[in-house]
Image 1 (spheres, one colour):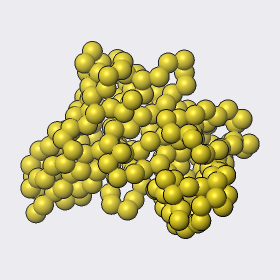
Image 2: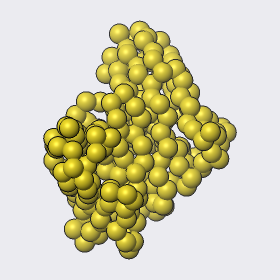
Image 3: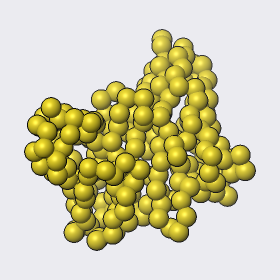
Length: 114
Length: 112
């Protein structure tokens, strides 16, 4: 089944403790992206990647890191999480980006930082 | 800059029609529409490209006015399954670095 898999689904952590949210897709998509969703603010892009080893900042990149060493994986790293990073996170992928292809989203990761 | 969606919320009875609007301050190359049900991930509905035609499937269709930098989503004879939050995503970037920026959503509730 074609899908984007995120782990974990739920995570509660403490301020300052480094964490990684994994994202993997099995559709051979070149484009991958991370979004955070907060009430009233919609989906805001954190980082995106057009291909392996190519990443760029989205609209809210502060406090996050990403890497794209393999085509299928695009982990999101929070080096020192803070409570304002409590949010619902979605990973998405598409064949070649926004211009001609729809995005497939993962199931989401609900992160709480206390 | 995020596109502006209107209305923010709408309640309809089954069988009624709905229109959701999406407006951007930038020139657009493409507009995406997604539906998200409570507790689930957004699901892709359709994409409209600059210079393309109005799209649709079943009773959900959309239009894209490039000059006005606006898109509208039309839901005809709404069904209970249409309930959810609808997001438009706009691609207004240059240089081939396509970035999709989402609006804040329109919550649609269909009642029997």
